[in-house]
Length: 85
Image (cartoon, rainbow, N blue to C red):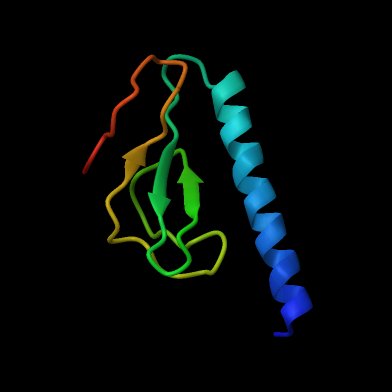
């Protein structure tokens, strides 16, 4: 894969993550949660509405399934701490 393609994939992944976060924050209601994991390989966050299953970093593709999940701060449900597995 050439550098241009890698940069484009990285930008698209970051935009999708920001979009997903915005959708959850604005439309999620009190019962929706957004979880995140920080990739040890690239240092970027990946977001999901589920804390279970196989996780791949949305930026570099690293398997981050074994990384502790964090609760995204500022959810509509008022919880601002971490929700560790």
